[in-house]
Amino acid sequence: MGLSVQRVNDGLTYIASMVVTGIGVTTVSEKVAIGGFLIGAITAWRAWVHRRRIEQAETQRNELIAQILQRSQGALSDAERNALRLAGGRDDETNH
Image (cartoon, rainbow, N blue to C red; front, side, top):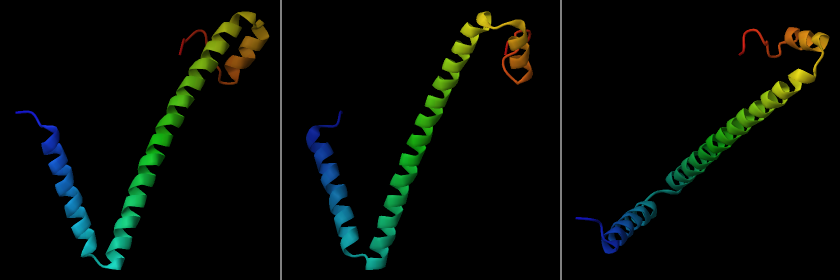
């Protein structure tokens, strides 16, 4: 009892006709309100996607910085390693 292409097309046609009929009988202020709602919803979705991409990029950047810092730990002198630890960098004794 799968959906055939014809049934999907019929459903889309029915929904489209309902939307067109519904918009046709609304007042101008209701149309403006619907338009504003749609623009707001699209803007919110795009902002959420952008924020998610920024968070992923920040995570990747932090991982890369951690790798670079870990690789450079051997090249640091004891004084530089202590200065880095005091400045809030990675502490070798706690490993976090």
